[in-house]
Image (cartoon, rainbow, N blue to C red):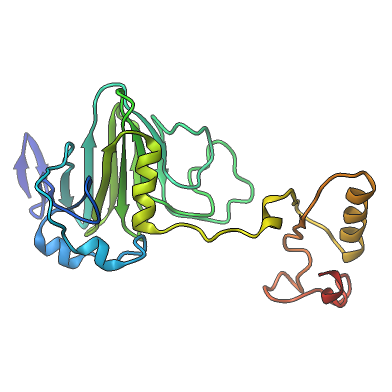
Length: 259
């Protein structure tokens, strides 16, 4: 153990400003704690092309905001302080309001079928924060880790990531608007495919329909009442014993008939 600012901390404690290199395009920076930590980081599951994350580009600009780090007992704590009045969004698929300022989220997705406003993790994990600065510009911050990650926005104007070592952090911007940040992010992580036209229509979903007869009844009712409906979801009751890729042979006979 050792003394650090009046506190007793483990001997493996290290801290400082993160090192950076420009990547992808102007305004995007990758941060790590050291070259050894960079080498120890897992491959990216966020970037569509690993080389775009790991290959520096020629750029003489420096980041406007540099995160600090603390590494202790196998945990890496990354903190980035932003101007007074900054508001936060993002943090992945979570419950609650759109603005995430003052929230604390754990990226550890679960089957959260009974979630409420106090549930901090739903079906997907995205350790991502969109910060809107008081001047209207925006900054995107991505913790590129597949491990359980705490995203702590409880301290004013501050973003903190806590996860097992080692992981890299990528910032996008600041750019002129949140939209510009998301365009830059999409250049890194990719975009969705063009959805089929029918998928943009109304989709009826509930838990659940106990038989194909009931599904057809619902479909006919939509048509009879002139309510547009392109898709009906059946959740899990169509399965044989809730086993994926199966149909209950008693209540969903010959499912091909209903396509």
